[in-house]
Image 1 (tube, rainbow, N blue to C red):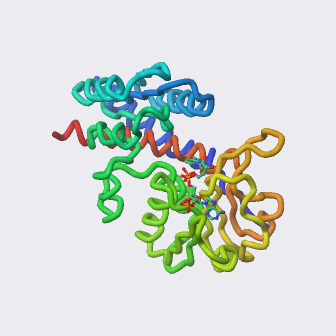
Image 2 (cartoon, rainbow, N blue to C red):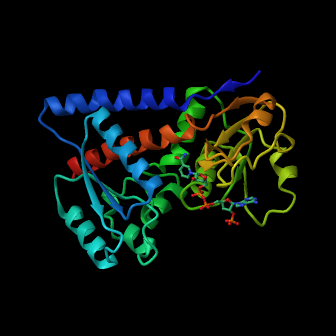
Length: 283
Ligand code: NAP
């Protein structure tokens, strides 16, 4: 019998912890601000930005939203980022990705000051994650680690397989599992005999971006399965990378979609914003 890993529950506990600390800071007249930039009108990005704003309200941060038209030039976007970098009342900055095609997302990420890079996407912060000495958590992978810890799932010595090697999820996920002494295999679209590898996983993390990609024959009995995917199925319904109905009964623990990794990502963003405030407050 599998157990759900409840991302709503765990994210609530993280946000409540942050809210308590923020209310103490507010009582001392301090304010914490996250600036969120969205360029264009991608509906999925709009939903993510609204969820981030709601989370800011919940924990007690001030959120500033900059909704720019799709025709915004790279220069205009970077000029706004520079302005926010210079503002002492702004602690964290994030630009919702993807940006329209005429804008180079690497240039945008590089423009955000490393002390305000609450998504931890800059080369500097990614490098810090690599060496295991970091201020900002990579939000989605850190959310996964928080869930594992909440359910007392030990990573030490376990075979961990990550499907996907993106800079946002797969690679940092692998690093965090490695830092916890997992024996980590990273797989991707060129991996041969994927199912043979995934079947060895005690902890399997799917970050592929393909609906119901992981099927029961790819999963070991008793595995912990973490589904990062956010896809639409043939009926337009939100679903993960894991074929939940067939896989769940083989697992010891499994995350649902929705209600699994998604809420955790936002909670970790709140944690990074609080961290950004502390870093800037100590300078
Ligand atoms: P991505 O940049 O598209 O990366 C997908 C990865 O999957 C790539 O490394 C790709 O390999 C690999 N892949 C594709 N087809 C494969 C196959 N047939 N076999 C094995 N590997 C394969 O996506 P991402 O940004 O990492 O996101 C992955 C999923 O997580 C998406 O559904 C996304 O929406 C979701 N997501 C959710 C959250 C959340 O908060 N829950 C946050 C971020 C992302 P190659 O490198 O070889 O192309």
